[in-house]
Amino acid sequence: MAKKGKKYQEALKKVDTNKAYAIEEAIALAKEIDYAKFDATVEVAFRLGVDPKKADQQIRGAVVLPNGTGKTARVLVFAKGDKAKEAEAAGADYVGDSEYVTKITQGWFDFDVIVATPDMMGEVGKLGRVLGPKGLMPNPKTGTVTMDVTKAVNEIKAGKVEYRVDKSGNIHAAIGKVSFGTDALVENFRTVNDVIQKAKPASAKGTYVKNLSVTTTYGPGIQVDTFSL
Image (tube, rainbow, N blue to C red; front, side, top):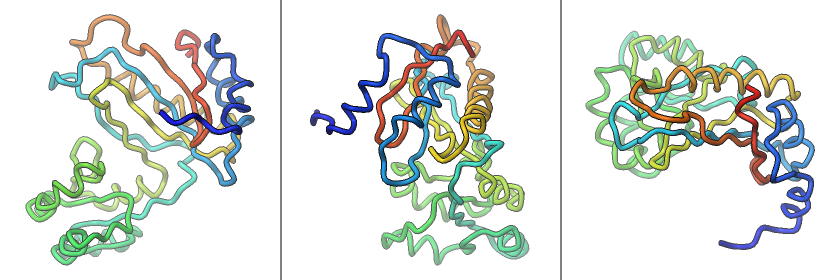
Protein backbone atom coordinates (compact mmCIF):
# COMPACT_ATOMS: atom_id res chain seq x y z
CA MET A 1 0.00 0.00 0.00
CA ALA A 2 1.31 3.45 -0.94
CA LYS A 3 2.38 5.68 1.92
CA LYS A 4 -0.14 8.36 2.81
CA GLY A 5 0.85 11.95 2.05
CA LYS A 6 2.15 14.64 4.39
CA LYS A 7 -1.24 16.31 4.87
CA TYR A 8 -2.80 12.98 5.81
CA GLN A 9 -0.03 12.33 8.35
CA GLU A 10 -0.54 15.80 9.86
CA ALA A 11 -4.27 15.15 10.17
CA LEU A 12 -3.65 11.73 11.70
CA LYS A 13 -1.51 13.29 14.45
CA LYS A 14 -4.62 15.05 15.75
CA VAL A 15 -6.49 11.76 16.16
CA ASP A 16 -6.02 9.63 19.27
CA THR A 17 -5.99 6.19 17.63
CA ASN A 18 -6.36 4.51 21.02
CA LYS A 19 -9.60 6.35 21.77
CA ALA A 20 -13.19 5.70 20.75
CA TYR A 21 -14.89 9.10 20.43
CA ALA A 22 -18.50 10.08 21.08
CA ILE A 23 -20.21 10.52 17.71
CA GLU A 24 -20.53 14.31 18.11
CA GLU A 25 -16.84 14.58 18.96
CA ALA A 26 -15.80 12.28 16.10
CA ILE A 27 -17.73 14.26 13.50
CA ALA A 28 -16.45 17.61 14.79
CA LEU A 29 -12.88 16.30 14.67
CA ALA A 30 -13.33 14.89 11.16
CA LYS A 31 -14.47 18.33 9.99
CA GLU A 32 -11.62 20.07 11.82
CA ILE A 33 -8.81 17.96 10.34
CA ASP A 34 -10.16 17.72 6.79
CA TYR A 35 -7.66 19.18 4.33
CA ALA A 36 -9.37 18.68 0.96
CA LYS A 37 -9.56 21.73 -1.31
CA PHE A 38 -13.19 20.92 -2.05
CA ASP A 39 -16.30 20.30 0.05
CA ALA A 40 -15.44 16.74 1.07
CA THR A 41 -17.97 14.05 1.85
CA VAL A 42 -18.34 12.84 5.45
CA GLU A 43 -18.79 9.08 5.59
CA VAL A 44 -19.46 6.50 8.28
CA ALA A 45 -18.30 2.89 8.12
CA PHE A 46 -19.96 0.12 10.11
CA ARG A 47 -18.28 -3.27 10.57
CA LEU A 48 -21.08 -5.67 11.36
CA GLY A 49 -21.19 -9.10 12.94
CA VAL A 50 -23.07 -10.64 10.03
CA ASP A 51 -22.28 -13.27 7.41
CA PRO A 52 -23.22 -11.75 4.02
CA LYS A 53 -22.92 -15.20 2.43
CA LYS A 54 -26.17 -16.09 4.18
CA ALA A 55 -29.24 -14.84 2.32
CA ASP A 56 -30.98 -13.68 5.50
CA GLN A 57 -27.96 -11.59 6.57
CA GLN A 58 -27.61 -9.51 3.41
CA ILE A 59 -28.49 -6.06 4.72
CA ARG A 60 -29.58 -3.59 2.07
CA GLY A 61 -31.87 -0.60 1.94
CA ALA A 62 -32.15 3.16 1.60
CA VAL A 63 -33.01 6.09 3.84
CA VAL A 64 -33.73 9.79 3.30
CA LEU A 65 -31.32 11.96 5.31
CA PRO A 66 -33.16 14.75 7.19
CA ASN A 67 -30.53 17.30 6.14
CA GLY A 68 -29.79 15.94 2.69
CA THR A 69 -26.47 14.78 1.28
CA GLY A 70 -25.13 18.10 0.03
CA LYS A 71 -25.38 16.81 -3.51
CA THR A 72 -28.31 16.79 -5.92
CA ALA A 73 -28.38 13.37 -7.55
CA ARG A 74 -28.97 13.02 -11.29
CA VAL A 75 -31.84 10.59 -11.77
CA LEU A 76 -32.52 8.41 -14.81
CA VAL A 77 -35.99 6.85 -14.92
CA PHE A 78 -36.92 3.93 -17.15
CA ALA A 79 -40.66 4.28 -17.73
CA LYS A 80 -43.28 4.60 -20.46
CA GLY A 81 -46.55 6.46 -20.97
CA ASP A 82 -48.12 8.10 -17.93
CA LYS A 83 -45.32 6.90 -15.65
CA ALA A 84 -42.76 8.63 -17.88
CA LYS A 85 -44.80 11.85 -17.64
CA GLU A 86 -44.96 11.48 -13.84
CA ALA A 87 -41.18 11.06 -13.68
CA GLU A 88 -40.62 14.18 -15.78
CA ALA A 89 -43.04 16.17 -13.62
CA ALA A 90 -41.23 14.99 -10.47
CA GLY A 91 -37.95 16.40 -11.77
CA ALA A 92 -36.14 13.34 -13.14
CA ASP A 93 -33.12 14.39 -15.20
CA TYR A 94 -33.61 11.74 -17.86
CA VAL A 95 -36.68 9.68 -18.72
CA GLY A 96 -36.98 7.01 -21.40
CA ASP A 97 -36.71 3.33 -22.19
CA SER A 98 -34.72 1.37 -24.79
CA GLU A 99 -32.80 4.40 -26.10
CA TYR A 100 -31.11 4.74 -22.69
CA VAL A 101 -30.25 1.04 -22.67
CA THR A 102 -28.37 1.69 -25.92
CA LYS A 103 -26.66 4.82 -24.55
CA ILE A 104 -25.47 3.05 -21.40
CA THR A 105 -24.21 0.11 -23.45
CA GLN A 106 -22.15 2.64 -25.41
CA GLY A 107 -20.59 4.03 -22.22
CA TRP A 108 -22.90 6.87 -21.13
CA PHE A 109 -23.06 7.34 -17.36
CA ASP A 110 -24.13 10.94 -16.75
CA PHE A 111 -26.45 9.94 -13.91
CA ASP A 112 -26.19 8.87 -10.27
CA VAL A 113 -29.32 6.77 -9.65
CA ILE A 114 -31.64 4.69 -11.83
CA VAL A 115 -35.33 4.24 -11.09
CA ALA A 116 -37.40 1.78 -13.12
CA THR A 117 -41.01 0.69 -13.22
CA PRO A 118 -41.35 -3.11 -12.85
CA ASP A 119 -42.43 -3.54 -16.48
CA MET A 120 -39.14 -1.99 -17.63
CA MET A 121 -36.89 -4.39 -15.73
CA GLY A 122 -36.76 -6.73 -18.72
CA GLU A 123 -34.96 -3.97 -20.63
CA VAL A 124 -32.89 -2.74 -17.68
CA GLY A 125 -31.90 -6.32 -16.88
CA LYS A 126 -29.90 -6.38 -20.12
CA LEU A 127 -27.53 -3.93 -18.44
CA GLY A 128 -26.84 -6.12 -15.41
CA ARG A 129 -23.19 -6.73 -16.24
CA VAL A 130 -22.61 -3.01 -16.73
CA LEU A 131 -24.69 -1.59 -13.88
CA GLY A 132 -24.17 -4.31 -11.28
CA PRO A 133 -20.44 -3.72 -10.60
CA LYS A 134 -21.11 0.03 -10.31
CA GLY A 135 -23.92 -0.47 -7.81
CA LEU A 136 -26.39 1.21 -10.15
CA MET A 137 -28.85 -1.62 -10.76
CA PRO A 138 -32.38 -0.70 -9.58
CA ASN A 139 -33.68 -2.83 -6.73
CA PRO A 140 -37.06 -3.09 -4.95
CA LYS A 141 -35.27 -3.12 -1.56
CA THR A 142 -33.98 0.40 -2.14
CA GLY A 143 -37.23 1.66 -3.62
CA THR A 144 -35.79 2.11 -7.11
CA VAL A 145 -37.99 -0.52 -8.76
CA THR A 146 -41.45 0.93 -8.24
CA MET A 147 -44.64 2.16 -9.85
CA ASP A 148 -44.54 5.23 -7.60
CA VAL A 149 -41.91 7.06 -9.63
CA THR A 150 -42.93 10.43 -8.18
CA LYS A 151 -42.10 9.33 -4.64
CA ALA A 152 -38.87 7.67 -5.76
CA VAL A 153 -37.59 10.74 -7.60
CA ASN A 154 -38.64 13.11 -4.81
CA GLU A 155 -36.86 11.05 -2.15
CA ILE A 156 -33.66 10.76 -4.18
CA LYS A 157 -33.62 14.49 -4.84
CA ALA A 158 -34.29 15.16 -1.13
CA GLY A 159 -31.18 13.25 -0.05
CA LYS A 160 -31.82 9.53 -0.12
CA VAL A 161 -28.78 7.31 0.42
CA GLU A 162 -28.50 3.60 -0.20
CA TYR A 163 -26.62 1.22 2.08
CA ARG A 164 -25.51 -2.33 1.46
CA VAL A 165 -23.34 -4.74 3.41
CA ASP A 166 -20.28 -5.83 1.42
CA LYS A 167 -18.75 -9.30 1.37
CA SER A 168 -16.60 -8.42 4.40
CA GLY A 169 -19.55 -7.33 6.53
CA ASN A 170 -19.01 -3.58 6.14
CA ILE A 171 -21.49 -0.83 5.33
CA HIS A 172 -20.31 2.57 4.10
CA ALA A 173 -22.72 5.51 3.99
CA ALA A 174 -22.30 9.19 3.19
CA ILE A 175 -23.94 11.47 5.76
CA GLY A 176 -23.26 14.87 4.21
CA LYS A 177 -20.48 17.35 3.50
CA VAL A 178 -17.75 18.97 5.60
CA SER A 179 -19.56 22.31 5.11
CA PHE A 180 -22.55 20.98 7.07
CA GLY A 181 -22.88 21.94 10.72
CA THR A 182 -21.90 19.23 13.20
CA ASP A 183 -25.48 18.98 14.48
CA ALA A 184 -26.82 18.37 10.95
CA LEU A 185 -24.25 15.63 10.35
CA VAL A 186 -25.02 14.02 13.71
CA GLU A 187 -28.75 14.03 12.89
CA ASN A 188 -28.04 12.43 9.50
CA PHE A 189 -25.83 9.84 11.18
CA ARG A 190 -28.50 8.93 13.72
CA THR A 191 -30.99 8.40 10.89
CA VAL A 192 -28.61 5.99 9.15
CA ASN A 193 -27.69 4.29 12.43
CA ASP A 194 -31.35 3.75 13.33
CA VAL A 195 -32.18 1.92 10.10
CA ILE A 196 -29.06 -0.23 10.30
CA GLN A 197 -29.80 -1.15 13.91
CA LYS A 198 -33.36 -2.10 12.97
CA ALA A 199 -32.05 -4.19 10.07
CA LYS A 200 -30.18 -6.57 12.39
CA PRO A 201 -30.91 -10.11 11.15
CA ALA A 202 -32.56 -12.39 13.70
CA SER A 203 -29.97 -15.05 12.85
CA ALA A 204 -26.95 -12.79 13.52
CA LYS A 205 -25.07 -13.92 16.63
CA GLY A 206 -22.82 -11.98 18.99
CA THR A 207 -21.99 -8.28 18.73
CA TYR A 208 -23.86 -6.62 15.87
CA VAL A 209 -21.86 -3.39 15.39
CA LYS A 210 -18.27 -4.49 15.92
CA ASN A 211 -16.67 -1.26 14.82
CA LEU A 212 -17.76 2.20 13.70
CA SER A 213 -15.68 5.01 12.26
CA VAL A 214 -16.12 8.45 10.71
CA THR A 215 -13.96 9.81 7.93
CA THR A 216 -13.90 12.41 5.17
CA THR A 217 -12.95 11.86 1.52
CA TYR A 218 -9.19 11.99 2.18
CA GLY A 219 -9.07 12.10 5.97
CA PRO A 220 -8.11 9.39 8.47
CA GLY A 221 -10.72 7.21 10.13
CA ILE A 222 -11.88 8.23 13.61
CA GLN A 223 -13.17 5.46 15.86
CA VAL A 224 -16.61 5.95 17.40
CA ASP A 225 -17.67 4.64 20.81
CA THR A 226 -20.62 2.43 19.89
CA PHE A 227 -21.72 2.31 23.53
CA SER A 228 -22.32 6.07 23.50
CA LEU A 229 -24.92 5.91 20.72
